[in-house]
Length: 491
Image (cartoon, rainbow, N blue to C red; front, side, top):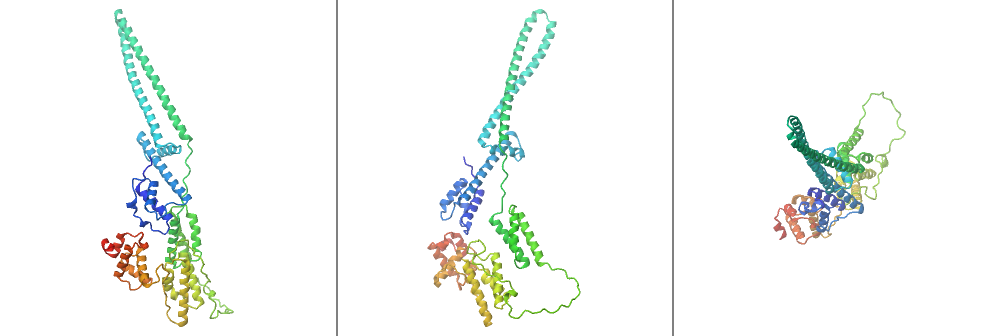
């Protein structure tokens, strides 16, 4: 009979499978606690979730399915092993967590024996032990009787010498009874010896079976997951940016080399190694050698000074933007840490070409280019070129540049429908907790002068028409966001 896995472990494993097979989809679109059935096994649970939510992917590639099946088999084997350990501990009074019980249970599982087989064999052994104990008690009782009879015989022999011949017949009769009892005792002793021999043979057979079981293979080496590697990269980049203000050249290459070294360690130990690497780079970048007193030497003037209007390569290393994204993260998203570093170098070089100070427009460049989410890499490149062109025109005319932080969004070109699409889109992201936050976010993306009543009307209409943006949105979330009861939204 299949065993029911704990509902907490099923929920955790199903969420991992969901996030693997549905990248970019928030796993919280499903109320896992309400949908999971605690009476189902893990495979049944997975089939039931696929039936309830067919819009998501629940079946992976063959190698993924093989890995999940292996994990479930190992879970079944682990439950089998624990039940055998509990049976052995209860039957024979052994400590549940002792190494002896764990080794015996592991050998029995590797031999292919199930809990039912072990229970049956244990029952047979217990029956034999009870039989032997019973036979031994009978033998001990007969031995006591024999001893008593021998003492009585000794007394009778002493009396016989003192009694007249008329009692000799009675004495002989008593001797015959004593001989019969001695024969009975010997018969019980033989049966006890045979039972002990059978128990020894069964015990030796069990020990031989356990010895023939090959030792368990070493546990597989667990490597860091892609999510953990990404977390380490974020930790590394954040540490360098906080202390140095930038990510030094070749720092990411050193990070990748270090990750290869620590990928088999637990995440906590790997994080310590990565933090140590970041501290080494910080010490190397901020190191200032101690000044030492030297004699002043007059040097001849350089043969040629740098002329005004020198090429930008004199001040900034030339950098070209790649035609494809560096990070493998899916769009829509903002540039990754490595992409931000290359964008900054390219920005500095392009502004050096037109004779502008890149640090003068650094805050604007971060706000209108680096911090904006893009739907494609081409959209990012177009926004970059637009920013450079605006700065170049402003430098030529001596005016403050005007920037348009409007990345491409899947909204209608018509103004009225565009405002409604933007409201419904931003509501469906679940990023904004209040109407004020939502209106502020819309203003940042060019949707100005939005009122609370306009937001409520757009949300009511989208909910009534079952807009595609609200596929995974619950009525309770909309009620909390708008500050209205659910009935007010549905009418």
